[in-house]
Amino acid sequence: MLLEAESIGSSAVFECQVSPSTAVTSWMKDGSNLRESPKHKFTSDGKDRKMMVKDVQLSDTGEYTCVAKNAELPVKWTKELVPEMSAVKGQPLYLSCELNKERDVIWKKNGELLKKQEHKFQINIIGLVHAVTIQNAIEEDAGCYSCEVANQNELKTSTNVKIPVLVICLFVCLLGFCRSVWSGSTFSEVCSVRGDTTAALRLMFAAIVIDVSLMRLPVTF
Image (cartoon, rainbow, N blue to C red; front, side, top):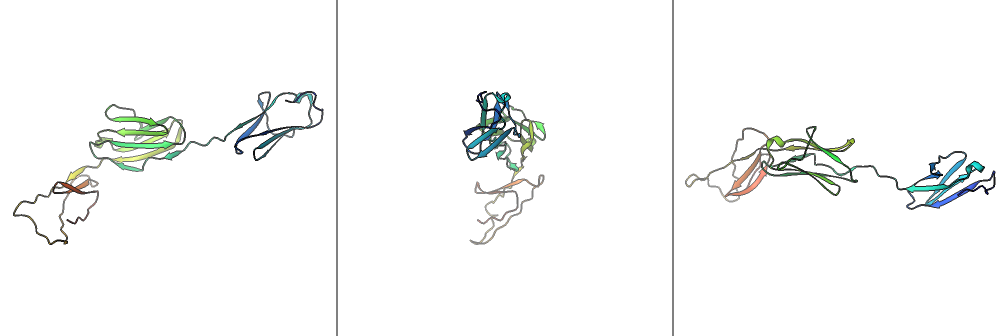
């Protein structure tokens, strides 16, 4: 508080300490912000903050306040969507991303607003995690899914979802037509697939899945 009793023409110094030392401070007089000028000099040293009022006049009488606040961290993604994802037809697919702060987000598919739809799209928020569950995936669910912070379109993360066609190549070995091979040797079969060239191949032997691949693969029995 600067009172009229202060010596006219002298300087008045106000001091305070803040924590943490990185806190951003500002000075106010009677509720109004003050800017640094030849009249008001601000200094900062660690946790110490000072303001000097030079050449005190009666017009400088009033209540001075030091306001401290932590520097606000910018909003950013702490976990983004995986660039590409694949789902098995008929199975659910879970998409999730995470922000460092609570913010409203908007989900889109191919640039169009994605809305919650019973038995198809579930949109959830768990803490800072934003998620979409695609239930009973079908070919039409393939596309570009994105999550963006409301009113901040530049803060966006996206993924390209594929629903590959699953084709089972079934090799039937009948008694009398089986191929004999020596133990440790290599056996090969060729399977031609028509349609989507990215079709996933599930190789099975004796009703047991050996491997699933998007490419040709060697298998040893």
